[in-house]
Length: 138
Image 1 (tube, one colour):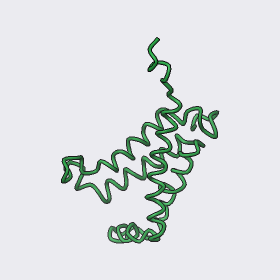
Image 2 (cartoon, helix red, strand yellow):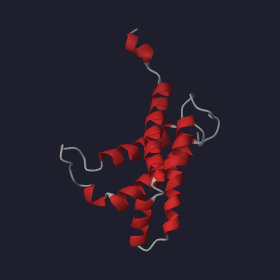
Image 3 (cartoon, helix red, strand yellow):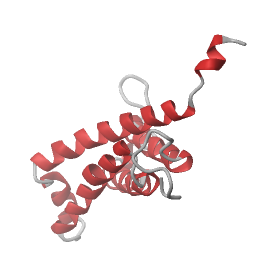
Image 4 (cartoon, one colour):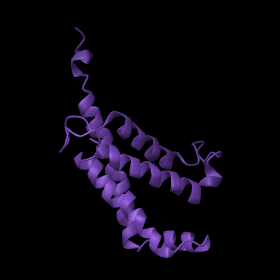
């Protein structure tokens, strides 16, 4: 048997996926938290949405990533992150959806990575290296 076949481990891959997506978004959320969501508040105010709704982003950038990282209701948390990223792409990055950046990459490659990474977590679940593995939302 090939040594590489012995190394296949879906659950380790799922853990790595959860940690990478969760930690990177969490760091982004902490940065927004330190600015009191002022950028998001101004965007919402400009389109006539009350500024207090900016704090819902807190759920998508702080709470959901922490749940994804620990593996508790990771599928549900990833849906929150998918929604959060979809709204961010529409509100802030819509002009870049069909654009390339100065290096030839997709104009929203980071946002796309977060969005599709969260979709993968939703589809595959948290795996066995998670706090909870018994719910359909894990």
